[in-house]
Length: 341
Image (cartoon, rainbow, N blue to C red; front, side, top):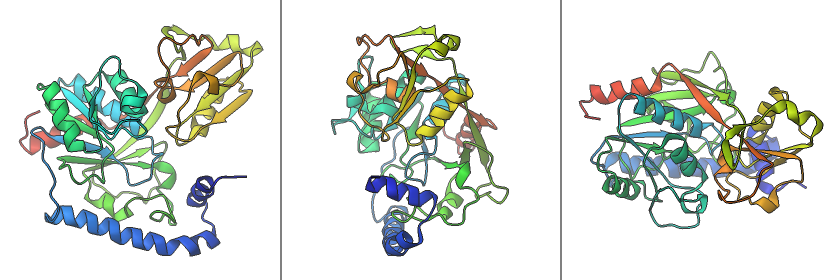
């Protein structure tokens, strides 16, 4: 029996007329609340805090599942290659503590959240998490005063923090749809018109519909898979040919797990079992299926302690390729506004 959230998410993709009738009034109410909240910050009725360094927000108007995290990692890496000292702030969804946490070498997913920890490990950029992004930013700058630019992972709707550049990630699959709606009748946090006010839109996961051009600055991203490595020994690469006579399971606690499973199948790997967990779900060794080899996502890999003896667990790394150069665009935007980074 499908759970309520599964029924709702299915409705977001293929609207059910009966559910639309029930949920549409709630979406109209949500739209009014969201519009008033943004207007309160824009007008100055509610205060927003400006940090002493430029802030670039990478977010979305969807309720997750847009492929944003690899795009943040690619942007941060691109800025680092240009010699910019970048820091990352995030809410740290799914972590156990509410206190601000500046990540370090022994930080765990329960301290920081899975996505911030993944970004920290992939990019090496100083990272802090907190429900108040401004507070996280201040803590990060106190710990790393040489930071010249902060990238806020998510937080497009976190108007309590002022931003210098706004980047919205939008999934290619939704670019041609005419039935999108705000929560709870649809998956949107803000209306499509919000895209008109951001500095750039990145279409993720495919080719955009020809009619979709909400911004003068349009970018596209695609995901490229890397070589599968052993969880507890990343230097060891999996020879996929060895899997032909073994039972193989794949586990994913991400918003769109089928994308991960399809990526493995496209690599010629036969999956005997797939386990789709809720996005950000906790996962431990006891939760893994019984198989000769278990392949997991990078986002799930950071939830395991390094001292676990899980020699049969492997990780598929991914990276986002963004065209044209998003890091160059951000750098130029900040130069144009005469901000030093």
